[in-house]
Length: 467
Image (cartoon, rainbow, N blue to C red; front, side, top):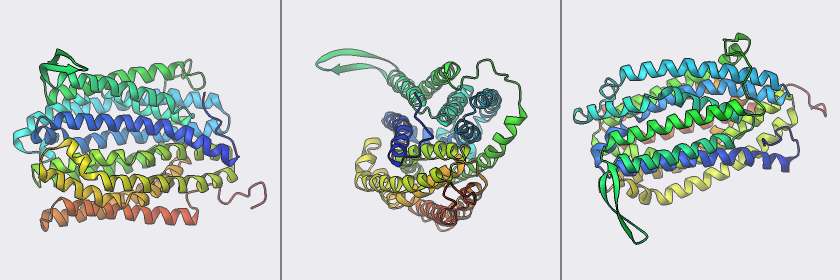
């Protein structure tokens, strides 16, 4: 059962925040755990295998984040409809989300498969591993329709206050992925467990096996979440029209388009960023890939709370409840910063140990540990930005985040990295320093927006006490 999103009692609000946040955190934790396992499994095949898989990671972010941005438009619309108590309107919006999954899933399938051989070339991947990287990318994106369903339908369910279903889907996907990895990456081999000795079957496909495992898991996730959404007691699209409904699509796309451009622009920046790092050599590429994987686990508290912030502020906006909107900010920001201080401290202390899980190369471990400890210091500041951005997304304000992220990515990170790595030959550490500068700029801009109150569309509306 979904939690009561319209409560005004602070104790109950904290309970609702945590009930919305923890399933998302667990879902992301499971996804990160699989990334860890994937990286460790592929890493055991050697640095070249790690580089082949990691070389196209930022392109994966580009496509995934662009798809996620479309979900943000539906999140704002559906959360507002649910806050206003208009379930029929919410169900109509869900039907339009189904339509958009079909459109964007088909489009990205055709695009990614046709460009799979060119992507490693554009990413400046070493010629010796370009073919392998291209094959991995092709297999990974064959089930793009199912991936789009998992991403967008998961956002739709969270907008209605159901964060447990996407979590369950994520757990199932991850279990399948890890199991198939174990069977497809390695060859048949002797195996011992609890004193029992037997021959473990294995296909010995290496990097290709890892791609097949991920693709199969994506198919399962897409089918699973579609069935659950269809049967959902509150927002099922069953019986609704799946033809384009511009009364719904127009406001959804008005919110989604700036967020989509933001994510596309920043993800394209990640591609350019990774391309410059790939040009630094195999050690830098491997250290960067592993450090990114390690770092992602420590952002889980931030992004879990962002989902709750977007949902609850969207509901408060739909209910026109200015007091609840204010109470949410007072609760969210200290919680988020506290969590990110703990997360950043843990990352700083554990960086070398975590790098050793994925690589046996002393050069990779030392370089990756250094950049992880650098970024750990900036996590509380980035956490503040995540929460304010989440609240802005929840009320449909996506223009400012678009400009903030584009300016930070291209004006600070990309220009700075180009100067440091391509002109001054300063290496990976300087590139991560530019990334941290980007994060600090975001903190400054979101802090200004928060202090001025420009994120809140209800700020000029008198509350029940006349304030």
